[in-house]
Length: 297
Image 1 (cartoon, rainbow, N blue to C red):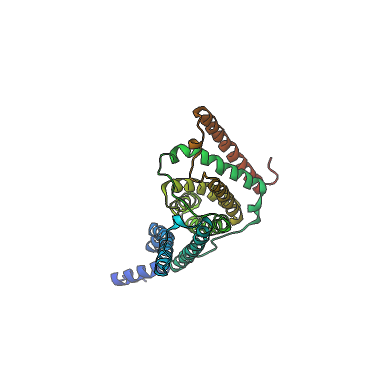
Image 2: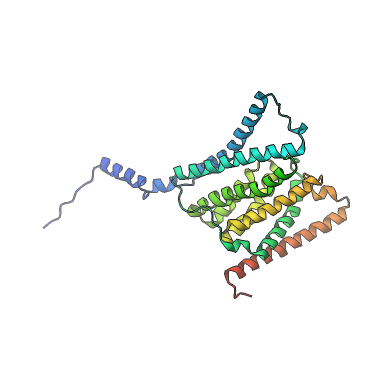
């Protein structure tokens, strides 16, 4: 018996294609799957926008209350307390907004891991040395950019903001939500590179964008290798602690190239920093290999 062939009407084919896209099996749905380029721009907008909104609201509140707002005239301790409060509020809003947006766009799965492997002392030591050495290596480039304009006050509240709040919030956002979301769709390399750039741009000023992006590459690699927020939070805190010490000694915005008067001495220091970058990078990778394979030499 000859089989009867049926033809599906065009309207039904289109309806089926739309249903397929809505259920996640169609090519159209895949193109719109979180995170797209538009999603990354939206997340960055949330990050920068929340800081602007909180800062503007604080200025307006103080002006309406008759206190005025001249941060340059404020006592360092009072300024530190104010900046810490503003940072905590703005970054809480950023994290909440990014998590809400991620969920609304269909993002799912774990976004922050806390493996004990991230507490390896040798790894933390060599990674911190690498961050320090790379900072010196980047100086000729940073010297071409506008000087940093950064005043976050002094004292306990400034330390709390730099050494606790910043590492926790920024790592949860950049190595947590952003890197993990990108990794799930685009793979390790794209997630590593884009999340590092996201981390840099979130800092705003050109010199910070460059420096933070490069540090983000180191932190991102450590996070991917250890699967642990502990490691990157500790490294971030150590880096900020050194920055605070430089700031309280009057060298917060200064570069080594500006402090060393002898050209020959600076060249020698720079060569040493290059060597230290290579050595610390190798030792960090070696430590990671040993963590994954304890029997390795």
